[in-house]
Length: 122
Image (cartoon, rainbow, N blue to C red):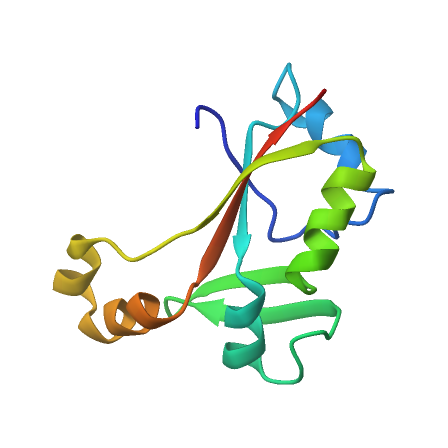
Protein backbone atom coordinates (compact mmCIF):
# COMPACT_ATOMS: atom_id res chain seq x y z
CA UNK A 1 0.00 0.00 0.00
CA UNK A 2 1.75 3.09 -1.25
CA UNK A 3 0.09 6.10 0.30
CA UNK A 4 -1.58 6.32 3.62
CA UNK A 5 -3.78 8.54 5.65
CA UNK A 6 -4.73 8.24 9.27
CA UNK A 7 -8.32 9.24 9.73
CA UNK A 8 -8.53 9.49 13.50
CA UNK A 9 -10.27 12.85 13.30
CA UNK A 10 -12.57 11.95 10.42
CA UNK A 11 -16.24 11.13 10.70
CA UNK A 12 -16.59 8.59 7.87
CA UNK A 13 -20.05 9.73 6.91
CA UNK A 14 -20.72 10.02 3.15
CA UNK A 15 -20.67 13.83 3.49
CA UNK A 16 -17.06 13.92 4.70
CA UNK A 17 -15.25 11.04 2.98
CA UNK A 18 -15.42 12.59 -0.55
CA UNK A 19 -13.14 15.40 0.62
CA UNK A 20 -10.33 12.93 1.35
CA UNK A 21 -9.07 12.52 -2.23
CA UNK A 22 -8.39 16.24 -2.38
CA UNK A 23 -6.16 15.95 0.69
CA UNK A 24 -3.09 14.83 -1.24
CA UNK A 25 -3.59 11.58 -3.12
CA UNK A 26 -4.08 12.39 -6.81
CA UNK A 27 -5.95 9.17 -7.57
CA UNK A 28 -7.94 9.25 -4.37
CA UNK A 29 -7.25 7.50 -1.10
CA UNK A 30 -5.05 4.45 -1.47
CA UNK A 31 -5.02 3.43 2.20
CA UNK A 32 -6.53 4.65 5.46
CA UNK A 33 -5.90 3.54 9.04
CA UNK A 34 -8.05 4.07 12.09
CA UNK A 35 -8.31 2.65 15.56
CA UNK A 36 -10.25 -0.59 15.42
CA UNK A 37 -13.82 -0.21 16.76
CA UNK A 38 -13.26 -3.03 19.25
CA UNK A 39 -10.24 -1.15 20.61
CA UNK A 40 -12.33 1.98 21.13
CA UNK A 41 -15.09 -0.01 22.79
CA UNK A 42 -12.83 -1.97 25.15
CA UNK A 43 -10.37 0.87 25.81
CA UNK A 44 -12.82 3.76 26.24
CA UNK A 45 -15.93 1.90 27.39
CA UNK A 46 -19.55 2.19 26.39
CA UNK A 47 -20.96 -0.05 23.68
CA UNK A 48 -19.48 -1.29 20.43
CA UNK A 49 -22.21 0.45 18.42
CA UNK A 50 -21.71 3.87 20.09
CA UNK A 51 -20.91 6.78 17.77
CA UNK A 52 -19.17 10.01 18.69
CA UNK A 53 -15.90 11.76 19.42
CA UNK A 54 -13.36 10.17 21.75
CA UNK A 55 -10.52 12.17 23.29
CA UNK A 56 -7.62 10.48 25.01
CA UNK A 57 -3.95 10.85 25.83
CA UNK A 58 -1.55 8.38 24.26
CA UNK A 59 2.08 7.82 25.19
CA UNK A 60 1.79 10.19 28.15
CA UNK A 61 1.51 13.49 26.23
CA UNK A 62 0.00 12.89 22.79
CA UNK A 63 -3.59 14.15 22.63
CA UNK A 64 -5.73 12.19 20.17
CA UNK A 65 -9.28 13.00 19.12
CA UNK A 66 -10.96 10.33 17.04
CA UNK A 67 -14.37 9.53 15.66
CA UNK A 68 -15.81 6.33 17.09
CA UNK A 69 -18.29 4.15 15.21
CA UNK A 70 -18.76 0.46 14.38
CA UNK A 71 -16.83 -1.08 11.49
CA UNK A 72 -19.99 -1.43 9.39
CA UNK A 73 -20.45 2.37 9.59
CA UNK A 74 -16.85 2.96 8.45
CA UNK A 75 -17.36 0.62 5.51
CA UNK A 76 -20.71 2.18 4.60
CA UNK A 77 -19.19 5.67 4.78
CA UNK A 78 -16.42 4.93 2.32
CA UNK A 79 -18.55 2.87 -0.08
CA UNK A 80 -21.37 5.44 -0.02
CA UNK A 81 -18.73 8.01 -0.99
CA UNK A 82 -17.94 5.99 -4.11
CA UNK A 83 -14.91 3.96 -3.04
CA UNK A 84 -14.49 0.21 -3.32
CA UNK A 85 -12.88 -1.61 -0.40
CA UNK A 86 -10.13 -3.70 -1.96
CA UNK A 87 -8.77 -5.02 1.33
CA UNK A 88 -9.42 -4.76 5.06
CA UNK A 89 -6.45 -5.43 7.35
CA UNK A 90 -6.58 -5.82 11.12
CA UNK A 91 -3.02 -4.91 12.06
CA UNK A 92 -1.07 -7.08 14.49
CA UNK A 93 1.81 -6.12 16.72
CA UNK A 94 5.29 -6.68 15.32
CA UNK A 95 8.01 -8.48 17.30
CA UNK A 96 9.71 -5.12 17.86
CA UNK A 97 6.72 -3.99 19.94
CA UNK A 98 7.32 -6.92 22.32
CA UNK A 99 10.80 -5.57 23.04
CA UNK A 100 9.60 -2.00 23.72
CA UNK A 101 6.27 -2.68 25.44
CA UNK A 102 5.53 -6.32 26.34
CA UNK A 103 2.10 -5.50 27.82
CA UNK A 104 0.98 -3.67 24.67
CA UNK A 105 2.33 -6.48 22.49
CA UNK A 106 0.32 -9.01 24.48
CA UNK A 107 -2.82 -6.91 24.13
CA UNK A 108 -2.37 -6.30 20.38
CA UNK A 109 -1.67 -10.00 19.87
CA UNK A 110 -5.07 -10.91 21.29
CA UNK A 111 -7.25 -8.07 19.90
CA UNK A 112 -6.88 -5.60 17.03
CA UNK A 113 -5.84 -2.04 17.82
CA UNK A 114 -6.04 -0.65 14.30
CA UNK A 115 -7.84 -1.42 11.07
CA UNK A 116 -6.60 -0.51 7.60
CA UNK A 117 -8.67 -0.14 4.46
CA UNK A 118 -7.22 -0.15 0.95
CA UNK A 119 -9.67 1.83 -1.14
CA UNK A 120 -10.09 2.23 -4.88
CA UNK A 121 -12.05 4.73 -6.92
CA UNK A 122 -13.90 2.81 -9.65
